[in-house]
Image (tube, rainbow, N blue to C red):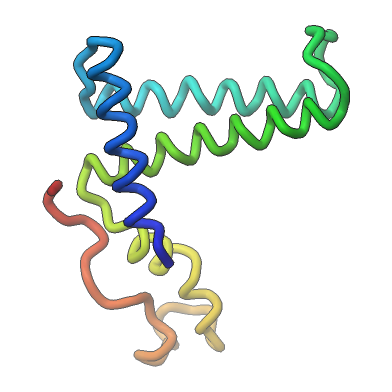
Length: 127
């Protein structure tokens, strides 16, 4: 995976955005931006599935494109938040999700070492 590299790039782009528009980019600002973007994902999804009034945003292909871009926006800000907070997303995703690909047993108490999550901490000090 290259998630941590992508997260670092997005975090840097977001830092430049804050400089250009002249506001303080704090962790709580990032958290609020994630929430804002999730609202935009929901709005785009409702539009894509025809469950809101027509806002003159184009056809179905346009609606799907808008949804995809809003997902990317929300995911990008989540990645920037993780990087800013010192979270190793690759390890965290492995520990939370990908570990299931290695499991033959479902109960934690029955797992072999090979079935466990990637060793190491998922949280580190910010760069």
